[in-house]
Length: 628
Image 1 (tube, rainbow, N blue to C red):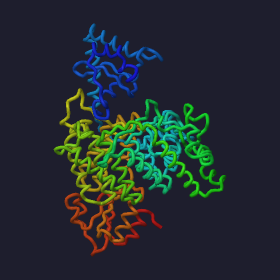
Image 2: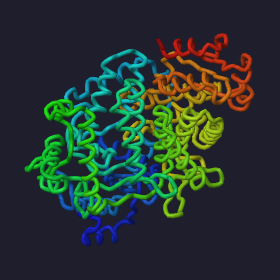
Image 3: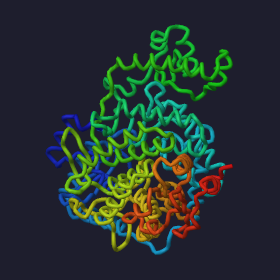
């Protein structure tokens, strides 16, 4: 639409004569996008971008749609016809337009004020699992057909469901999807990192744009899958995602950029695709032919006459055997070829980088890095997370208020629920990676601010905008987990986690209320709310609070903490300190406990009721982690 209509003089002339045109950056103003996207869904039954919404001067919507060609075709009304006819209708019968806009606004307000008395039951979890199983692609992994999006929180849900129910199919769907994406063209086999989605069902041809949030959420998902399966491939992909983000999406101050465009020189994917001759020229005949065989690079191409490198139909073990190579030798050969191709690709025109630094998306990457740091015992990952967090706290918190975005020294817009919820998530992950009390203190502080700014005292749940925000036509709540989890979903899950770490039962009560407030929305489409339902899984799974006292560096304490960090135990909360008094301000229930002599002492609690303390760390690991 940008090329067809907005840069077209004929269209521009009509718009400038008859309308006030406002272009909204949905990453900077997700509050506006969220409201008017809901309008589009109400009016047309679906949403999407580009999004065109027509409003009265009072900002009340009366018409909406996604893509309009310049003139009517493909059975779609043309943009020129739409803007001409709507203008005439508004002039001829303004009352009808106002009436329509009032009805739409009323519908939005009612949706925002929805509440329920009954709580979602665990039946919703089983229904979600069945919906995912029914839409699962058994051949290529993922859910539904083309286009295929990663949607990592669906896989996070399945791993937790597997942990709760022991349902092998849940783990199979997760692994099949993760393996297929890692082998597909959606993954950049030369420079690493995942593209936004695949245009086909087999993950071959991506929409080449790379988003920070996808790579952050996928980093978490591959790391959790490694915790669960110990599959080295997942550790490798995690490390490669981090390498890519550090190299291509990190500012000199250590914060993370938003996205890398799909286009270079005006052509989508030009930076990333290859023809066979290029590969042979770079690698030479022998290595080049071998690489082409492994990565599906042919003379005719696998994408519009070009090739997207992929391993979809390649059996690497079979290739090694056929060429008489060990797996290690095969890997070395592949890596030599990759580095040469990477150097050659670097000479091309690089796609545009969207260098906005968004608080919410940075928080996701910080959370992912912290999780990877604890699971893989990698201090460099933790250092990256600390640098980005320091940037957010220095530049994107102003007068105590979290802000949305930073670019070239300019900070804009008061933070939304996503900014606060994701930041709390980052602090909790940082605590679990370091057991430094200050991260837990900051999570508690931000949670109090989040409740003060966004919580609906009357109906429960969090509004999208703070009470200090610009007034829009409605103050709405978002619960749907789309490309990223909703702020309400993340807030609910983090409040449960924080409550279990601190013993603050009021947070648990508030989270519990959310599973009544949003019951109807969730039950209309359970599998569209898989992050929100992780909180319900936390309520359903047997929870344990593990409190550990002992000197830093003590061999028994460190061994127990490392084992807990490496394990996939989302239903465990782990508190660690040198002395019980360290918890007096943040977890008063644990401050009352006693340490046995100078030894590392462990309390295992369920719902804050604890067994006798023990210094037998081996027995604790056996009990908690089924250590043999």
